[in-house]
Image (cartoon, rainbow, N blue to C red):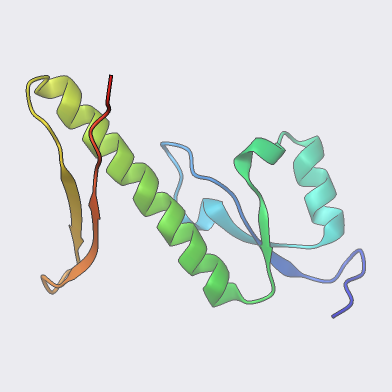
Length: 108
């Protein structure tokens, strides 16, 4: 597929603590993306290009979920320093387990 300066695609970037899903996945062209970089977008934000809107939104949702889980783990550790977090589980609105991950403990 060929893309010119004004052809649209989807961009996904890493979340910040205040980000929403729409902040992370947005439609842009090469011209728009150039302006995003001039406006402060950095390669460290891992911009990723997609041709499909739904694939971009799924990627953005995954990044947002991972950031929020990370924040919750850090917060729990600060509030309860003696608590050891071994596993993270995320459930859907219907109570179905949609994601689970074991967290290895650091080895000194």
